[in-house]
Amino acid sequence: MKNLSLSLLIIGLTFVSCKKEEATKNEIETTPKEEVTAETKPDSATVAKAWADYATPSKGHEMLAKDSGTWDAELTFWSPDNSQEMKSTASVTYKMIMGGRYQEGTYSGNMFGMPFEGKGMVAYDNATEEFVSTWIDNMGTGMMVTRGKYDEATKTSTFHGEMVDPVTKKAKKVKEVITYIDDNNQKMEMFEVSEDGKEFKSMQVVSKRKM
Image (cartoon, rainbow, N blue to C red; front, side, top):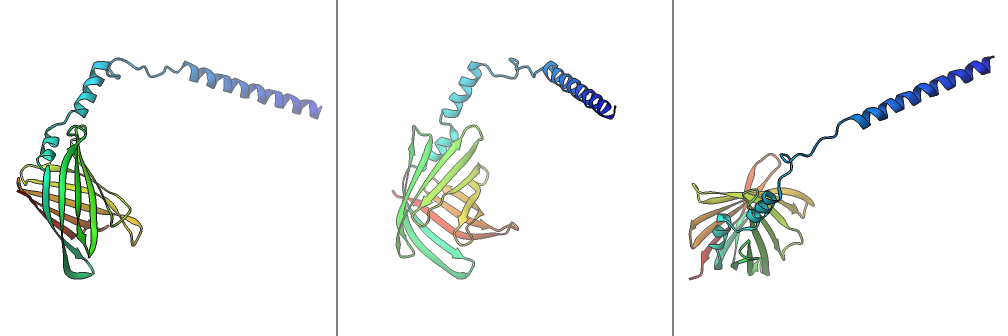
C-alpha cells in the first residue's frame, strides 16, 4: 500500500510538472515578437546617402590637406627624472592619400644619436566629426592612437588617447595639442597624464614649412 501511494505521488508530480512546462511553452510562443517597421529600418536611399556622406571628403579633410608638403621640425624632450631638456631635428612630409581621405605624415631624422623614422596617419571621421590619429616609429613596436577635435577660437586641435609604457608594460594616457600658428608654422605639445589627472609635458615639436 505504501509503494502504491508513493507511485501515485510521483505520477501526480510528473503530471503537474508537464502542465507547467506546456503552459510556459505556450506563453513563449504566444508572446508577440517586436515588429520591424519602416520607421525603425531605414530605406535603401537613406542608407546609400549615409554611406556616400561618410565617404566624401569634407572640411576636416580640407584642413588636413593644407599641411601637404615638407616641413622642418625642431623637437624638444623632457623627462620627469631629468630636468635637462634634450633636442633633436627632423624632416616631415605630409600628403593626402586614398582620394584625399587620409593624411600620411612621414618623419625622418636623428634622435638620441640614432637614426629616427616615424609615420603618422590622421583621419577625419565624418560620422563622429572628430580626428583620429595613429603613430608608429622605429623607437618602439607599439602604436599610439588618439582622437580629438579642432577649436576654431584657439586655432588648436586637442587629442586624447593611450600608449604603452615599456617600463610598466601598461597603457598610459596621453594628450596632444597642436597649435596652428599660421599656414607655415605649427607647434605640437605632448603631455603624459597620470592616473590622478596630472599632466607632464614630455615633448614639443615646432614645425616650419619649407619654402
